[in-house]
Length: 168
Image (cartoon, one colour):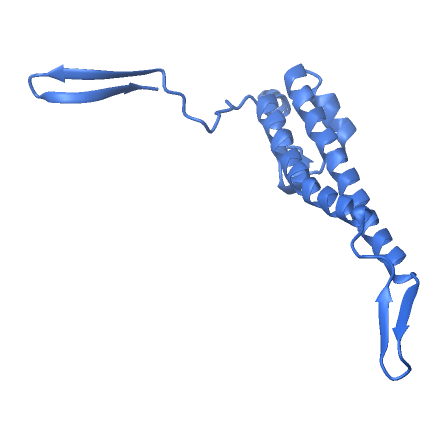
């Protein structure tokens, strides 16, 4: 009887303290190391609305980054294909032929695609940070901002000398 009660207490305690973990690229894993689907993560984070809001913001950021990345690549490839199937202008004499393209590469579409690719990089990198913050909030870890806040700065003077007092 004591063994079964102890077993169920241990089982219940491990289930009640089940935590989530985040690995690279914002992938979420449960306590046993099994990768969770976004719907499963949302169900678990429904207990803490602020964590769920951060997770959803991270997933939206990932979607926007993917759209920018694919759109940028498609614009660059489309611009190159358009450039490669263009007409050429021939001029000169029969012994000295000059060939010049009628269009320039890259065009505005190619430049827009390159800008889209450049913008997609920080957007895609930032989504994992938001997901990690959401999981840390769910697990109950204290989130510390990287910036140091200075509450008070004062000058102190006594018989030993003069100094600065910093309160963080």
